[in-house]
Length: 104
Image 1 (cartoon, rainbow, N blue to C red):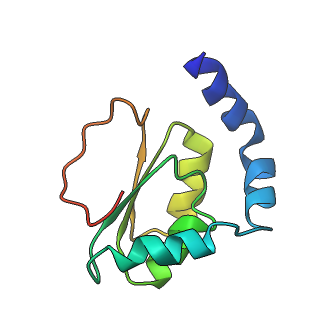
Image 2 (tube, rainbow, N blue to C red):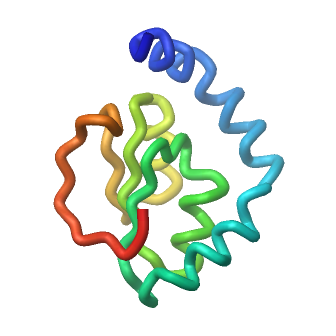
Image 3 (spheres, rainbow, N blue to C red):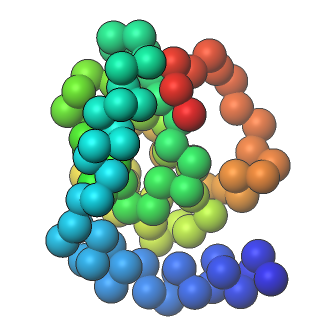
């Protein structure tokens, strides 16, 4: 099953990204989340997709982002958009990560 999900996102990465960039339903939740994250603390974004809109929002609020996604295509978009951040192609269930992170 995980392989099928990966294949799906690889095939449809750009279409998914285009749709995600049109709406930002998580803004209120992220504002509350950031209240508990120390200023400037790194944030781990599991299942980051192409980085829009969540990683962008975190970055604009001065939080370094480490993003993890199983899709090479999605991570390639992240690396193009946000080259200063850390982007990892991996299954979030088994990726070894060095912290600490102010929020996940």
